[in-house]
Length: 300
Image 1 (cartoon, rainbow, N blue to C red):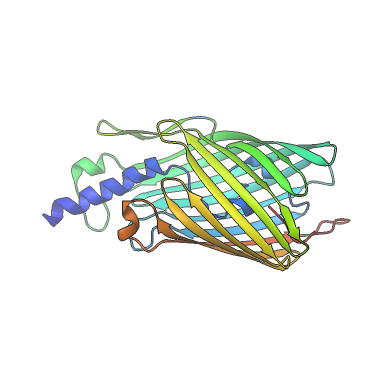
Image 2: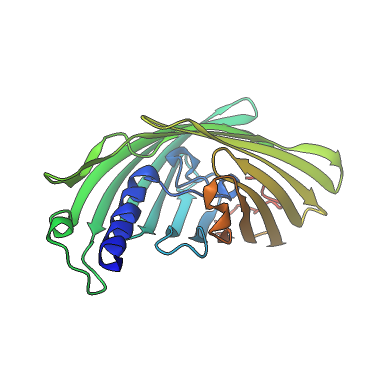
């Protein structure tokens, strides 16, 4: 019996990569570069971030995501450049992506509108026959391929608000192509927004939202509210439809250095009994450019 159950579980986990084609991020409100290329250069300095997410702890083959991103304005002009390297593993499927971003910003009164473009190279690898398991039917589904893609986005922001639309992958891609199974990477649309309200001098409240749409799946919404205490400590709570309730904590260690942690402590699906939540760590450091000054706190 075990001989048949184990390959079936591996095959199921591989199919989960289709359902979660784009990685989830709980701390999206502090780094939107993976969602929208128009976010490039928003920190007015050279911004470097690292994020590590382990999803559904206790569930074998669950998603694991790592990203490194860097972006900056160029020569005090209206253009910004950036890049993201992302690895997303789920079950027997690995996706590694290198993305290169360009943004052009224009001023409108006291706000800015940024238009972003990106080019990416995606490497997909799926290996069903591992851990000494061999099944000829599964071997036929193994994949190892590399494909380019393009994306775009727009972001309107001021000192205390942002509103954006991102399309990281504009073109559909086939990443499984076999007689047994056909799979495509579909377009994902992201709409994000947030606003900072000052309750007192040292007490700020920032509600955020993210709406994600993809063909063939229900629209997913993420609602978050963060409170900033003493301009140093962010505390937040999020609800992600069809998925989880999450807690967020961020420390503004100094004007340039920010560290955050998110814990998806309650899963709203049937998986709740089988897993122990999801963990996400984010580190961001902004290097000052000549004749610039890093403002603290950074609201997004």
